Length: 260
Length: 304
Ligand SMILES: Nc1ncnc2c1ncn2[C@@H]1O[C@H](COP(=O)(O)OP(=O)(O)OP(=O)(O)O)[C@@H](O)[C@H]1O
Ligand SMILES: [Mg+2]
Image 1 (cartoon, chains in turn orange, blue):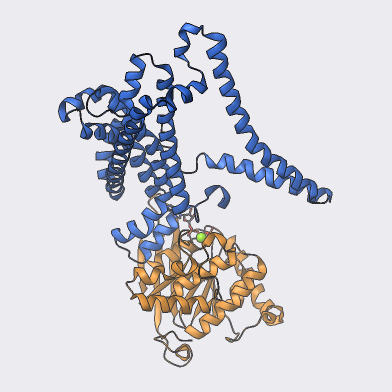
Image 2 (tube, rainbow over the protein chains, first blue to last red):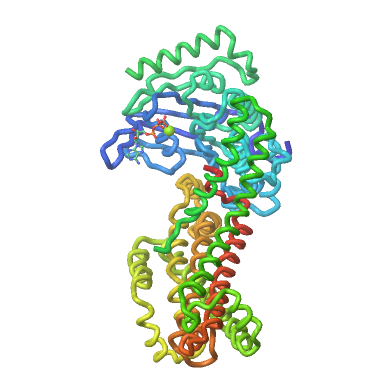
């Protein structure tokens, strides 16, 4: 690890928590009258991995868009205290004319980092997501999983305090998805950012998170919150333990309740 | 309308190619046959792809000969001189070629000057329109007008305003070639993926950065499609200006008009062929340039 991370990995566990996101009574009503969110309270600290599950159309993406500043709350306050935000969209949104390396460098370029810093940050990020040797490839030559890795690496170059994920692995096959789950956990443990992760998969939610939030159908609000008791060193076997099954069952139940 | 969208022609071709390649393979897999017949059939198709154009070309030449010798009586054969006379009575006749080659040179200069100016003006015009709706609604009507005004009617006027020399020829050429560049560049810039735009918004990219790092590169395939159409049109423009002005150093247009009024059939047809060849050449030049610049990443039909 050669990236000069401003926050040492240990920060997440020892130092007093730094709040990166605080939503108080946030609502979002669209001009057409659709109420996507209502009365959302949510806080995220550095070192927290918060996952939101909820029925389709309940406003999960809207929640992320408000957190990122792409959209604004129509009521309540949405405070974000992050110097840098990483946002991983559902599709990789790589620029097709740029090579992997050039794509990964894009955000650093947009933030006006120097050429050498950009280059170094890109190389480090590519190494972290396991894309070494693919730097020169164009996006069209990548598999879905590799595209997602490149997209992840692109956000990593900024060393974000807050990471937003909108169903990043939704389009991937299960094996690739589970492998990327493990790699994301590893990144989270070493970097200690705060994460807001959206998924449709209860198992993915429980496996990845320190906290799982369940949203109700429209207008979306958080109906239940589960603290996940597992430590940071999670292995795929965890998915087959009774504790995991029990928690996943509870989350699924809450999801069904909120649905009706 | 000339505003062809990028890849509008390719998908059908590509689909055809993919299906010829894929269907036999799928069959072979399904029936469990060895791949050998597939290869043979594929090779057969490829041979067909080469042979058919030759056959069509030969048929056309045949029809041409038939018209010359079977339809026209000898006294009127100058109306459609036999194909080989284009070679014997024009290409190999120095008194003709000493007129045609310099005229070709002058027309090439007009074509490329006009095209270059059209590219610069057209792209700036489109970029300006892409930056604000107000600018777009103020300027787009004039781009459309350019397409709708009968330029042929304006050509003599342009001659009176700007003289009958090189500048007027270039102006006609620019007017004819401009629209596809304007409309394709604008279309390309406006079709940038929303997700990409949001990425740039999220990271607070300036207008200029967005234009240079996102909009223009993304629009390149459409822009090149526009260039290709305009390249053909600029040849037409160069000939039309010449044809009307009938003054100054003769380009291909003046030659066409001269040969035609003197009923010199073979030289006339030869000059037509040369003119068409020039159009072909610039069209394919831009097709090749487009492949070179965006071919590595842009292949709409194959990616989806
Ligand atoms: N710009 C908009 N104008 C009007 N309605 C919108 C707009 N954007 C989203 N909506 C509506 O708001 C609701 C929430 O949308 P959102 O995309 O946040 O849902 P989601 O939970 O992310 O769904 P999914 O799981 O399918 O991605 C939906 O009903 C959607 O139709
Ligand atoms: Mg969504």
